Amino acid sequence: MYALSFAVTCLTLLARNYQVRHPTRDTVAIFGKPKKGDRAWAQSSGLDPATGACQVGDRMTLPRRTVLLAKPRGFCAGVSYAIEIVRLVLERYGPPIWVRHEIVHNRHVVDELRAAGARFVDDLADVPEGALVIFSAHGVSPAVREQAKARHLRVIDATCPLVTKVHLQVLRYAREGYEIVMVGHRGHVEVEGTMGHAPERMYLVESVEDVAKLAVRQPERLAVVTQTTLSVDDTKEILLALQTRFPAIRLPAREDICYATQNRQLAVKELARRAPVVLVLGSHTSSNANRLVEVARKEGTRAWLIEHAEDIVPQWVDGLARVGLTAGASTPEYLVRAAIDRLLELGFQHVEDLEVVKEDVAFPLPRALRQGALALRP
Ligand code: SF4
Image (tube, rainbow, N blue to C red; front, side, top):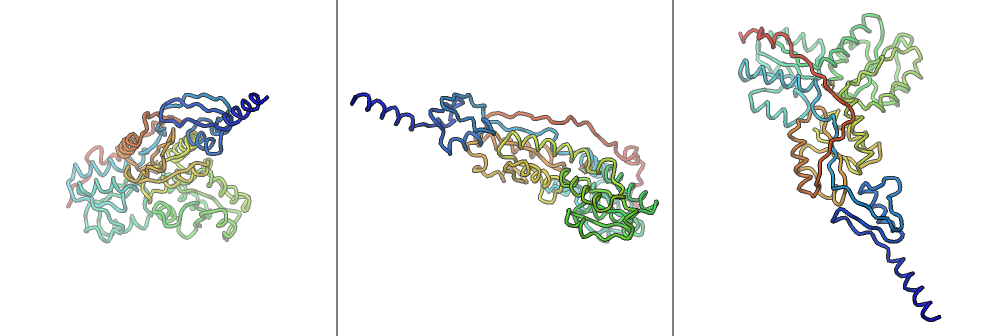
């Protein structure tokens, strides 16, 4: 009897002494019922996000610590097009050349082009009369084109063709007598350029709350366009609010959010479902990169915007089996490579592509530039 009771006590103690062997190696065994911390650890290690996969007697082979790389990520066709134009103009005409606004929203790209002889200005008044000026990928208003003409500037337009498409839509709606609501971010250079195409008949909304306050002159003849780099999901909500408030509003067949923004958001969603932490490479001024962080967070994961590899805080990824990595549309691939190297230094062992959409869009360079038909400086 005494022996039996001793055995029961021992077994009870053993059963309570459950533990998770921490993954310093690839295999982990779980004994007994998991403690709260064990479950959290198992979840953060990506074993089974739903249950934590902690069951009595579980024995699992952990994946190697993996960097999941979103595909597509980084440069879109519009950014490659704009950067290529600046490089070609520098090569063909020599420095200095002038660029209105940062050609794309990435400090590294801008610094590189600046070192090669590009001068970035926000106001054409700062460009010498008659000089060669490039308009950035974000596009400009007709008033800026007029200003360039008045200063006899020779213009090369690096506006992304997908932004130009929205400009043309605005002009068409205005010609047909519509008032136009733009969904976008106040102060963003693309929004300023687009709104400038019909300033007297355009309204800007940034949120569902703005829609509730919007006062238009002709609710029966209203159309909507959007900035190209918005969050797809947030924009859907705003478009729905507009449609509810103004049933006659003319919506775009598809919102104007460009293919690259949509694809990168789809890919980051998938990353967020598979990794407990997502890192987004991009500048703080990049609308596109900021939206990727928001989309990942909405999926319930922890996400950070980083400008370069040195911004990665080791504690963010400590002990994780997986981390997701992606990059905004204006982030060069060499920054992604540097971030991968940093994660490998921090103990990750394996890099894996997570291809969500295939992308093969490219824009041909402006004809004048391809044919070298641009007049030399006066
Ligand atoms: S993000 Fe879209 S609209 Fe902007 S430059 Fe790239 S392709 Fe063009």
